[in-house]
Length: 356
Image 1 (cartoon, rainbow, N blue to C red):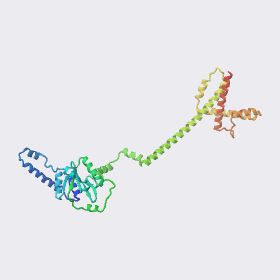
Image 2 (image 1 turned 90 degrees about the horizontal axis):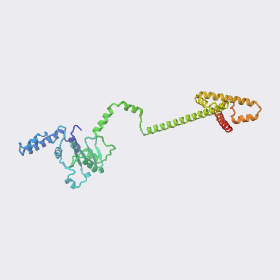
Image 3 (image 1 turned 45 degrees about the horizontal axis):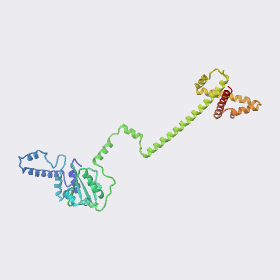
Image 4 (image 1 turned 90 degrees about the vertical axis):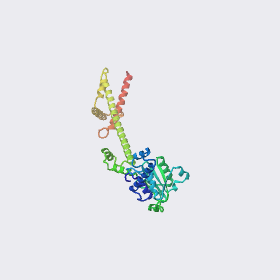
């Protein structure tokens, strides 16, 4: 559409040809203005009404933007023997004609005009603001016209025989199907402008970080995230188990050493200071002391193995596990030995309390 010449496009779309130009429509508008001026002059050129009419804009039937009034369109159609009737007028409504039985309509809202016409056996919205014709089904036609009226459009029924056109003849033989509604001309231009605009740094960063956003990618990301959380929980649980094991060994060593020291120290010496000193020892120092203790126990076992006292050997074997082959104890044996010593120290402490 060029400028605001929608009235010209409306007429040419209705007749399906370049039948009217802006110059021809301007000529019709000027003729109408002259006829109105002559009617106003009949009351006297010195009358107030006539002077007010002359002070108005140069024409009420056209303006510089290319707008033409309904009078211009009606007079232009009279050349082809066509007549316009207001769709919602009482005279037309009394006829009770189904819109589907008409041939064409002209619609107007403010300064915009467009045509709805039947070509062949199908209806089309020939709005010049659209990129192409819009197919309107027979069942939707009445609803479409009612919607236009609700939006404030004036609808005129075109009465008379329209000139023959190639599109009407072709569509008499075939029916067309429209998969997608044509876009508005302004909408297409806006999308093209948005595509030409440079993208911001934020948009580019989002595209780099999420190059293939979609439901499948989101599901995959969620699955990977849940898998990472599960692995993280497993690692935390393993670390907690190892920490609990180290604390159990440390507590067992502290219990065994406290039982030994309590038997060798005088009874009036408090043991709280030694306990606090043991708590302050580092894990490396505890490991060394634990290793030294186990080596001492191992030496005692070897010495006792050389004596023929079977009862002592049975007693030692019941309280201390046999060393592994090769003379070195495994971590599991060391832990079991530590737990046995801790239980033994608790039993000794309870026996000493009962004796007191």
